[in-house]
Length: 440
Ligand code: HEM
Image (cartoon, rainbow, N blue to C red):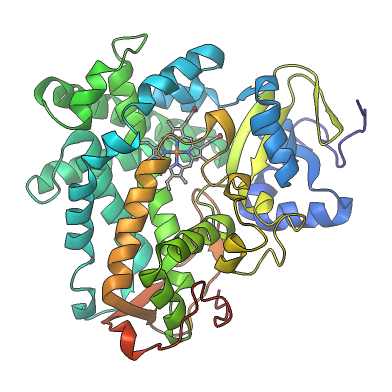
Protein backbone atom coordinates (compact mmCIF):
# COMPACT_ATOMS: atom_id res chain seq x y z
CA UNK A 1 0.00 0.00 0.00
CA UNK A 2 1.40 3.38 -0.99
CA UNK A 3 1.69 5.98 1.76
CA UNK A 4 1.69 9.11 -0.40
CA UNK A 5 0.50 12.32 1.18
CA UNK A 6 -2.47 13.95 -0.56
CA UNK A 7 -1.41 17.15 -2.41
CA UNK A 8 -2.53 20.48 -0.94
CA UNK A 9 -2.87 21.66 2.61
CA UNK A 10 -5.67 21.64 5.14
CA UNK A 11 -4.13 24.65 6.90
CA UNK A 12 -4.78 25.71 10.45
CA UNK A 13 -8.20 25.64 12.14
CA UNK A 14 -10.41 28.64 11.23
CA UNK A 15 -7.73 30.78 9.55
CA UNK A 16 -6.97 28.04 7.03
CA UNK A 17 -10.65 27.48 6.21
CA UNK A 18 -11.48 27.71 2.50
CA UNK A 19 -15.26 27.29 2.71
CA UNK A 20 -16.04 30.76 1.38
CA UNK A 21 -13.74 30.26 -1.62
CA UNK A 22 -15.30 26.89 -2.34
CA UNK A 23 -18.93 27.98 -2.00
CA UNK A 24 -18.33 31.18 -3.99
CA UNK A 25 -16.91 29.42 -7.04
CA UNK A 26 -16.50 25.66 -6.70
CA UNK A 27 -15.42 25.22 -10.34
CA UNK A 28 -12.56 27.68 -10.03
CA UNK A 29 -11.69 26.28 -6.58
CA UNK A 30 -11.31 22.72 -7.91
CA UNK A 31 -9.89 23.49 -11.35
CA UNK A 32 -7.17 25.81 -10.05
CA UNK A 33 -6.04 23.18 -7.52
CA UNK A 34 -6.23 20.31 -10.01
CA UNK A 35 -4.05 22.43 -12.29
CA UNK A 36 -1.50 23.57 -9.72
CA UNK A 37 -1.14 20.18 -7.96
CA UNK A 38 -1.37 18.17 -11.17
CA UNK A 39 -3.73 15.85 -9.28
CA UNK A 40 -7.49 15.27 -9.33
CA UNK A 41 -7.33 14.46 -5.63
CA UNK A 42 -6.22 17.18 -3.23
CA UNK A 43 -6.90 18.45 0.27
CA UNK A 44 -8.11 21.77 1.70
CA UNK A 45 -10.03 22.87 4.80
CA UNK A 46 -13.81 22.90 4.27
CA UNK A 47 -16.34 23.78 6.98
CA UNK A 48 -13.27 24.00 9.16
CA UNK A 49 -12.41 20.32 8.67
CA UNK A 50 -9.49 18.89 6.71
CA UNK A 51 -11.20 17.56 3.59
CA UNK A 52 -10.10 15.49 0.63
CA UNK A 53 -11.67 16.56 -2.68
CA UNK A 54 -12.12 13.68 -5.12
CA UNK A 55 -12.34 14.89 -8.73
CA UNK A 56 -11.44 11.73 -10.68
CA UNK A 57 -13.63 8.85 -11.83
CA UNK A 58 -11.19 6.35 -10.31
CA UNK A 59 -11.23 8.12 -6.93
CA UNK A 60 -15.03 8.42 -6.92
CA UNK A 61 -15.47 4.70 -7.74
CA UNK A 62 -13.03 3.71 -5.02
CA UNK A 63 -14.76 5.94 -2.48
CA UNK A 64 -18.35 4.97 -3.28
CA UNK A 65 -17.97 1.37 -4.47
CA UNK A 66 -14.78 -0.60 -3.81
CA UNK A 67 -14.07 0.98 -0.42
CA UNK A 68 -17.64 1.86 0.52
CA UNK A 69 -17.18 0.14 3.90
CA UNK A 70 -14.25 2.40 4.80
CA UNK A 71 -16.43 5.53 4.65
CA UNK A 72 -19.73 6.62 6.10
CA UNK A 73 -22.04 9.53 5.30
CA UNK A 74 -21.02 12.77 6.92
CA UNK A 75 -23.82 15.21 7.59
CA UNK A 76 -23.91 18.25 9.83
CA UNK A 77 -25.94 17.99 13.07
CA UNK A 78 -28.28 20.69 11.68
CA UNK A 79 -29.19 18.46 8.71
CA UNK A 80 -29.94 15.52 11.01
CA UNK A 81 -32.12 17.79 13.15
CA UNK A 82 -34.03 19.13 10.15
CA UNK A 83 -34.81 15.73 8.64
CA UNK A 84 -34.86 13.40 11.66
CA UNK A 85 -34.11 9.72 11.46
CA UNK A 86 -33.97 8.98 7.73
CA UNK A 87 -32.04 6.64 5.45
CA UNK A 88 -29.38 9.26 4.62
CA UNK A 89 -28.09 9.26 8.21
CA UNK A 90 -28.21 5.49 8.65
CA UNK A 91 -25.15 3.29 8.24
CA UNK A 92 -24.09 -0.28 7.49
CA UNK A 93 -26.53 -3.17 7.60
CA UNK A 94 -29.36 -1.04 8.98
CA UNK A 95 -29.09 1.24 5.94
CA UNK A 96 -29.09 -1.69 3.52
CA UNK A 97 -32.23 -3.17 5.11
CA UNK A 98 -33.97 0.17 5.01
CA UNK A 99 -33.00 0.65 1.36
CA UNK A 100 -34.36 -2.79 0.47
CA UNK A 101 -37.69 -1.90 2.04
CA UNK A 102 -37.88 1.55 0.48
CA UNK A 103 -36.88 0.26 -2.95
CA UNK A 104 -40.18 -1.66 -3.11
CA UNK A 105 -41.82 1.74 -3.46
CA UNK A 106 -39.44 2.87 -6.19
CA UNK A 107 -39.05 -0.20 -8.42
CA UNK A 108 -40.36 -0.11 -11.99
CA UNK A 109 -43.62 -1.87 -11.19
CA UNK A 110 -44.41 0.42 -8.26
CA UNK A 111 -43.54 3.50 -10.31
CA UNK A 112 -45.93 2.57 -13.13
CA UNK A 113 -48.92 3.72 -11.04
CA UNK A 114 -47.56 7.28 -11.27
CA UNK A 115 -47.08 7.36 -15.05
CA UNK A 116 -50.52 8.75 -15.97
CA UNK A 117 -50.30 11.37 -13.28
CA UNK A 118 -46.81 12.45 -14.40
CA UNK A 119 -48.09 12.70 -17.99
CA UNK A 120 -51.12 14.72 -16.97
CA UNK A 121 -49.17 17.21 -14.85
CA UNK A 122 -46.43 17.64 -17.47
CA UNK A 123 -49.05 18.29 -20.14
CA UNK A 124 -50.93 20.75 -17.93
CA UNK A 125 -47.79 22.71 -17.09
CA UNK A 126 -46.10 22.61 -20.47
CA UNK A 127 -49.02 23.09 -22.84
CA UNK A 128 -49.63 26.39 -24.63
CA UNK A 129 -46.12 27.69 -23.96
CA UNK A 130 -46.19 29.15 -27.47
CA UNK A 131 -49.03 31.40 -26.38
CA UNK A 132 -47.08 33.07 -23.58
CA UNK A 133 -46.81 36.77 -24.34
CA UNK A 134 -43.51 37.06 -22.54
CA UNK A 135 -40.51 34.73 -22.90
CA UNK A 136 -40.65 31.98 -20.28
CA UNK A 137 -38.23 31.96 -17.31
CA UNK A 138 -37.47 28.25 -17.52
CA UNK A 139 -35.97 27.33 -14.15
CA UNK A 140 -38.95 28.82 -12.30
CA UNK A 141 -41.36 27.02 -14.62
CA UNK A 142 -39.64 23.64 -14.15
CA UNK A 143 -39.40 24.07 -10.38
CA UNK A 144 -43.14 24.69 -10.18
CA UNK A 145 -43.79 21.62 -12.39
CA UNK A 146 -41.49 19.42 -10.29
CA UNK A 147 -43.00 20.66 -7.01
CA UNK A 148 -46.46 19.80 -8.29
CA UNK A 149 -45.26 16.33 -9.29
CA UNK A 150 -43.54 15.66 -5.98
CA UNK A 151 -46.49 16.76 -3.82
CA UNK A 152 -48.94 14.85 -6.00
CA UNK A 153 -46.90 11.64 -6.05
CA UNK A 154 -45.89 11.54 -2.40
CA UNK A 155 -48.88 13.13 -0.63
CA UNK A 156 -51.76 12.91 -3.17
CA UNK A 157 -52.08 16.70 -3.15
CA UNK A 158 -53.52 18.06 -6.37
CA UNK A 159 -52.22 21.56 -7.11
CA UNK A 160 -55.33 22.47 -9.12
CA UNK A 161 -58.00 21.11 -6.79
CA UNK A 162 -56.25 22.24 -3.59
CA UNK A 163 -54.41 25.35 -4.72
CA UNK A 164 -54.26 27.06 -1.30
CA UNK A 165 -53.07 23.89 0.46
CA UNK A 166 -50.47 23.32 -2.25
CA UNK A 167 -49.22 26.89 -1.79
CA UNK A 168 -49.04 26.47 1.99
CA UNK A 169 -46.95 23.29 1.75
CA UNK A 170 -44.68 24.77 -0.91
CA UNK A 171 -43.99 27.77 1.33
CA UNK A 172 -43.33 25.55 4.34
CA UNK A 173 -40.87 23.37 2.37
CA UNK A 174 -39.05 26.50 1.23
CA UNK A 175 -38.82 27.72 4.83
CA UNK A 176 -37.61 24.27 5.91
CA UNK A 177 -35.04 24.28 3.14
CA UNK A 178 -33.72 27.76 3.96
CA UNK A 179 -32.71 26.51 7.41
CA UNK A 180 -30.59 23.90 5.74
CA UNK A 181 -28.70 26.13 3.34
CA UNK A 182 -28.17 28.99 5.77
CA UNK A 183 -26.27 26.73 8.19
CA UNK A 184 -22.88 26.14 6.58
CA UNK A 185 -22.32 29.43 4.77
CA UNK A 186 -23.87 32.16 6.88
CA UNK A 187 -21.31 33.55 9.25
CA UNK A 188 -23.78 35.69 11.19
CA UNK A 189 -24.68 33.35 13.99
CA UNK A 190 -27.80 35.26 15.06
CA UNK A 191 -29.22 35.34 11.51
CA UNK A 192 -28.40 31.68 11.14
CA UNK A 193 -30.13 30.70 14.36
CA UNK A 194 -33.33 32.54 13.50
CA UNK A 195 -33.37 30.94 10.01
CA UNK A 196 -32.75 27.59 11.63
CA UNK A 197 -35.50 27.90 14.22
CA UNK A 198 -37.95 28.96 11.50
CA UNK A 199 -36.92 25.87 9.60
CA UNK A 200 -37.62 23.71 12.66
CA UNK A 201 -41.07 25.31 12.99
CA UNK A 202 -41.74 24.58 9.31
CA UNK A 203 -40.62 20.99 9.89
CA UNK A 204 -43.17 20.50 12.71
CA UNK A 205 -45.98 21.96 10.58
CA UNK A 206 -45.01 19.80 7.62
CA UNK A 207 -44.86 16.68 9.81
CA UNK A 208 -48.32 17.45 11.16
CA UNK A 209 -49.69 17.74 7.57
CA UNK A 210 -47.88 14.55 6.56
CA UNK A 211 -49.26 12.64 9.56
CA UNK A 212 -52.79 13.77 8.64
CA UNK A 213 -52.24 12.46 5.11
CA UNK A 214 -50.87 9.18 6.45
CA UNK A 215 -54.06 8.75 8.50
CA UNK A 216 -56.54 9.83 5.84
CA UNK A 217 -55.20 8.55 2.50
CA UNK A 218 -55.91 5.00 1.35
CA UNK A 219 -54.16 5.00 -1.98
CA UNK A 220 -50.94 6.00 -3.68
CA UNK A 221 -47.43 6.32 -2.26
CA UNK A 222 -48.56 7.82 1.06
CA UNK A 223 -50.69 4.75 1.70
CA UNK A 224 -48.05 2.23 0.55
CA UNK A 225 -45.27 3.69 2.71
CA UNK A 226 -47.32 2.65 5.77
CA UNK A 227 -46.49 -0.99 4.91
CA UNK A 228 -42.71 -0.43 4.97
CA UNK A 229 -41.24 -2.14 8.07
CA UNK A 230 -39.45 0.90 9.53
CA UNK A 231 -37.62 0.57 12.87
CA UNK A 232 -39.57 3.52 14.37
CA UNK A 233 -43.24 4.55 14.17
CA UNK A 234 -42.39 8.05 13.01
CA UNK A 235 -40.08 6.93 10.18
CA UNK A 236 -42.75 6.93 7.44
CA UNK A 237 -43.55 10.60 8.15
CA UNK A 238 -39.88 11.55 8.33
CA UNK A 239 -39.12 9.87 5.01
CA UNK A 240 -42.08 11.64 3.40
CA UNK A 241 -40.65 14.89 4.75
CA UNK A 242 -37.36 14.02 3.02
CA UNK A 243 -39.08 13.12 -0.26
CA UNK A 244 -41.13 16.35 -0.41
CA UNK A 245 -38.13 18.47 0.58
CA UNK A 246 -37.57 21.48 -1.70
CA UNK A 247 -34.28 19.91 -2.72
CA UNK A 248 -35.84 17.34 -5.05
CA UNK A 249 -37.89 19.75 -7.24
CA UNK A 250 -34.80 21.96 -7.43
CA UNK A 251 -32.65 19.04 -8.60
CA UNK A 252 -35.19 18.04 -11.25
CA UNK A 253 -35.60 21.65 -12.39
CA UNK A 254 -31.82 21.92 -12.62
CA UNK A 255 -31.56 19.04 -15.13
CA UNK A 256 -34.62 20.18 -17.11
CA UNK A 257 -33.17 23.69 -17.34
CA UNK A 258 -29.78 22.47 -18.55
CA UNK A 259 -31.48 20.23 -21.12
CA UNK A 260 -33.54 23.15 -22.45
CA UNK A 261 -30.52 25.43 -22.66
CA UNK A 262 -28.30 22.86 -24.33
CA UNK A 263 -30.90 22.10 -27.03
CA UNK A 264 -32.04 25.69 -27.62
CA UNK A 265 -31.85 27.50 -30.94
CA UNK A 266 -32.26 26.76 -34.62
CA UNK A 267 -28.72 25.32 -34.81
CA UNK A 268 -29.90 22.52 -32.47
CA UNK A 269 -33.01 21.63 -34.49
CA UNK A 270 -31.42 18.40 -35.79
CA UNK A 271 -30.41 17.36 -32.24
CA UNK A 272 -33.97 17.94 -30.99
CA UNK A 273 -35.35 16.03 -33.98
CA UNK A 274 -33.10 13.02 -33.38
CA UNK A 275 -33.84 13.08 -29.66
CA UNK A 276 -37.54 13.12 -30.45
CA UNK A 277 -37.34 10.23 -32.93
CA UNK A 278 -34.74 8.01 -31.34
CA UNK A 279 -35.11 6.96 -27.71
CA UNK A 280 -31.53 5.74 -27.45
CA UNK A 281 -30.26 9.07 -28.67
CA UNK A 282 -32.50 10.85 -26.14
CA UNK A 283 -30.97 8.64 -23.40
CA UNK A 284 -27.53 9.74 -24.56
CA UNK A 285 -28.54 13.40 -24.59
CA UNK A 286 -29.79 13.08 -21.00
CA UNK A 287 -26.60 11.28 -19.92
CA UNK A 288 -24.60 14.12 -21.39
CA UNK A 289 -26.73 16.69 -19.52
CA UNK A 290 -26.17 14.75 -16.27
CA UNK A 291 -22.46 14.58 -17.01
CA UNK A 292 -21.94 18.27 -17.77
CA UNK A 293 -24.50 19.76 -15.41
CA UNK A 294 -25.10 17.37 -12.46
CA UNK A 295 -27.73 18.92 -10.15
CA UNK A 296 -25.69 18.55 -6.99
CA UNK A 297 -22.11 19.42 -6.28
CA UNK A 298 -21.38 15.99 -4.82
CA UNK A 299 -21.53 14.12 -1.54
CA UNK A 300 -19.56 13.99 1.69
CA UNK A 301 -18.22 11.07 3.68
CA UNK A 302 -15.90 10.53 6.63
CA UNK A 303 -13.23 7.80 6.77
CA UNK A 304 -14.18 5.19 9.41
CA UNK A 305 -10.68 3.72 9.38
CA UNK A 306 -7.25 4.40 7.90
CA UNK A 307 -7.45 3.70 4.18
CA UNK A 308 -6.22 4.95 0.79
CA UNK A 309 -7.72 6.60 -2.28
CA UNK A 310 -5.85 6.31 -5.57
CA UNK A 311 -2.79 5.31 -3.56
CA UNK A 312 -2.91 8.33 -1.23
CA UNK A 313 -3.15 7.83 2.51
CA UNK A 314 -6.53 8.73 4.03
CA UNK A 315 -6.44 8.74 7.84
CA UNK A 316 -9.42 7.71 9.96
CA UNK A 317 -11.71 10.68 10.67
CA UNK A 318 -10.78 12.54 7.47
CA UNK A 319 -13.63 14.19 5.55
CA UNK A 320 -13.87 13.21 1.89
CA UNK A 321 -16.04 14.81 -0.80
CA UNK A 322 -16.66 13.63 -4.34
CA UNK A 323 -17.17 16.61 -6.65
CA UNK A 324 -19.60 15.52 -9.35
CA UNK A 325 -18.92 18.12 -12.06
CA UNK A 326 -15.15 17.57 -11.75
CA UNK A 327 -15.44 13.75 -11.75
CA UNK A 328 -17.63 14.03 -14.86
CA UNK A 329 -15.00 16.07 -16.66
CA UNK A 330 -12.11 13.72 -15.90
CA UNK A 331 -10.20 13.72 -19.22
CA UNK A 332 -8.86 10.19 -18.52
CA UNK A 333 -12.37 8.89 -19.21
CA UNK A 334 -14.18 11.63 -21.09
CA UNK A 335 -12.36 12.96 -24.14
CA UNK A 336 -13.06 16.67 -24.81
CA UNK A 337 -14.64 16.74 -21.36
CA UNK A 338 -16.25 20.18 -21.65
CA UNK A 339 -17.98 19.40 -24.95
CA UNK A 340 -21.61 18.33 -25.24
CA UNK A 341 -21.25 15.12 -27.25
CA UNK A 342 -24.21 12.72 -26.82
CA UNK A 343 -22.58 10.42 -29.39
CA UNK A 344 -19.78 9.61 -26.93
CA UNK A 345 -22.30 7.29 -25.18
CA UNK A 346 -22.57 5.09 -28.27
CA UNK A 347 -18.84 5.32 -29.04
CA UNK A 348 -15.90 5.62 -26.72
CA UNK A 349 -17.99 5.77 -23.53
CA UNK A 350 -20.61 3.18 -24.50
CA UNK A 351 -21.74 1.23 -21.43
CA UNK A 352 -19.88 3.56 -19.05
CA UNK A 353 -22.85 5.35 -17.53
CA UNK A 354 -21.96 3.78 -14.18
CA UNK A 355 -18.92 6.09 -14.16
CA UNK A 356 -21.19 9.09 -13.54
CA UNK A 357 -22.24 10.27 -10.08
CA UNK A 358 -25.08 12.73 -10.78
CA UNK A 359 -27.21 10.35 -8.69
CA UNK A 360 -24.36 9.16 -6.47
CA UNK A 361 -22.88 5.72 -7.14
CA UNK A 362 -22.60 2.28 -5.58
CA UNK A 363 -24.73 0.85 -2.81
CA UNK A 364 -25.72 4.29 -1.44
CA UNK A 365 -26.79 5.85 -4.71
CA UNK A 366 -30.06 7.70 -5.20
CA UNK A 367 -33.18 5.61 -4.66
CA UNK A 368 -35.21 8.00 -6.84
CA UNK A 369 -33.38 7.26 -10.12
CA UNK A 370 -36.33 5.42 -11.73
CA UNK A 371 -38.78 8.14 -10.72
CA UNK A 372 -36.45 10.87 -11.96
CA UNK A 373 -36.06 9.03 -15.24
CA UNK A 374 -39.82 8.85 -15.71
CA UNK A 375 -40.30 12.54 -14.88
CA UNK A 376 -37.39 13.78 -16.99
CA UNK A 377 -38.35 11.75 -20.04
CA UNK A 378 -42.01 12.72 -19.83
CA UNK A 379 -41.21 16.42 -19.52
CA UNK A 380 -38.51 16.57 -22.20
CA UNK A 381 -40.59 14.26 -24.42
CA UNK A 382 -43.45 16.76 -24.25
CA UNK A 383 -41.12 19.65 -25.14
CA UNK A 384 -39.54 17.75 -28.04
CA UNK A 385 -42.87 16.56 -29.43
CA UNK A 386 -44.40 19.99 -29.43
CA UNK A 387 -41.94 22.82 -29.58
CA UNK A 388 -38.91 24.51 -30.99
CA UNK A 389 -37.33 26.92 -28.58
CA UNK A 390 -34.69 29.58 -28.48
CA UNK A 391 -33.29 32.11 -26.05
CA UNK A 392 -35.23 35.35 -26.01
CA UNK A 393 -33.45 37.75 -25.92
CA UNK A 394 -30.82 35.80 -27.89
CA UNK A 395 -27.92 36.93 -25.74
CA UNK A 396 -28.28 36.18 -22.05
CA UNK A 397 -25.66 35.26 -19.52
CA UNK A 398 -24.98 31.53 -19.48
CA UNK A 399 -22.93 31.87 -16.34
CA UNK A 400 -23.77 28.96 -14.05
CA UNK A 401 -23.89 28.73 -10.29
CA UNK A 402 -23.45 25.32 -8.67
CA UNK A 403 -24.99 25.79 -5.25
CA UNK A 404 -27.43 24.86 -3.89
CA UNK A 405 -28.22 23.28 -7.26
CA UNK A 406 -26.60 23.73 -10.64
CA UNK A 407 -28.32 26.37 -12.75
CA UNK A 408 -27.74 29.66 -14.58
CA UNK A 409 -27.21 32.56 -12.16
CA UNK A 410 -29.99 34.46 -13.94
CA UNK A 411 -33.14 32.50 -14.77
CA UNK A 412 -32.84 32.20 -18.56
CA UNK A 413 -35.78 33.16 -20.76
CA UNK A 414 -36.90 31.13 -23.74
CA UNK A 415 -39.42 31.59 -26.52
CA UNK A 416 -41.30 28.43 -27.46
CA UNK A 417 -42.97 28.00 -30.85
CA UNK A 418 -45.04 25.12 -32.15
CA UNK A 419 -42.84 22.92 -34.21
CA UNK A 420 -42.95 20.42 -37.00
CA UNK A 421 -39.53 18.81 -37.18
CA UNK A 422 -40.10 17.38 -40.65
CA UNK A 423 -39.90 20.83 -42.15
CA UNK A 424 -36.69 21.64 -40.30
CA UNK A 425 -34.35 18.76 -40.78
CA UNK A 426 -34.45 16.19 -43.49
CA UNK A 427 -31.12 14.46 -42.86
CA UNK A 428 -30.54 12.67 -39.61
CA UNK A 429 -28.10 9.93 -38.76
CA UNK A 430 -29.10 7.50 -35.99
CA UNK A 431 -26.85 9.26 -33.52
CA UNK A 432 -27.07 12.74 -35.04
CA UNK A 433 -23.43 12.94 -34.27
CA UNK A 434 -21.82 14.89 -37.04
CA UNK A 435 -24.06 17.89 -37.24
CA UNK A 436 -24.33 19.83 -34.08
CA UNK A 437 -22.44 22.70 -32.61
CA UNK A 438 -22.17 23.51 -28.96
CA UNK A 439 -23.91 26.63 -27.72
CA UNK A 440 -23.37 26.65 -23.93
C1 HEM B 1 -32.89 15.08 -10.19
C2 HEM B 1 -33.26 14.58 -9.02
C3 HEM B 1 -32.30 13.94 -8.05
C4 HEM B 1 -30.94 13.98 -7.99
C5 HEM B 1 -29.96 14.72 -8.91
C6 HEM B 1 -30.53 13.16 -6.87
C7 HEM B 1 -29.22 12.94 -6.50
C8 HEM B 1 -28.83 12.14 -5.45
C9 HEM B 1 -27.46 11.91 -5.08
C10 HEM B 1 -26.22 12.53 -5.73
C11 HEM B 1 -27.45 11.05 -4.03
C12 HEM B 1 -26.23 10.46 -3.32
C13 HEM B 1 -25.69 11.41 -2.26
C14 HEM B 1 -24.40 10.88 -1.67
O1 HEM B 1 -23.83 9.89 -2.14
O2 HEM B 1 -23.95 11.52 -0.71
C15 HEM B 1 -28.83 10.78 -3.70
C16 HEM B 1 -29.24 9.99 -2.67
C17 HEM B 1 -30.54 9.82 -2.35
N1 HEM B 1 -31.65 10.22 -3.08
FE1 HEM B 1 -31.66 11.35 -4.73
N2 HEM B 1 -31.65 12.65 -6.28
C18 HEM B 1 -32.74 13.10 -6.97
C19 HEM B 1 -34.06 12.80 -6.71
C20 HEM B 1 -34.47 11.96 -5.74
C21 HEM B 1 -35.84 11.53 -5.53
C22 HEM B 1 -37.04 11.88 -6.43
C23 HEM B 1 -35.83 10.75 -4.42
C24 HEM B 1 -36.96 10.04 -3.75
C25 HEM B 1 -38.06 10.55 -3.48
C26 HEM B 1 -34.47 10.68 -3.92
C27 HEM B 1 -34.08 10.01 -2.80
C28 HEM B 1 -32.77 9.82 -2.40
C29 HEM B 1 -32.39 9.15 -1.18
C30 HEM B 1 -33.33 8.58 -0.12
C31 HEM B 1 -30.98 9.14 -1.15
C32 HEM B 1 -30.09 8.56 -0.04
C33 HEM B 1 -29.83 7.09 -0.28
C34 HEM B 1 -29.01 6.49 0.84
O3 HEM B 1 -28.57 7.21 1.74
O4 HEM B 1 -28.77 5.27 0.80
N3 HEM B 1 -33.68 11.41 -4.75
N4 HEM B 1 -29.64 11.44 -4.61
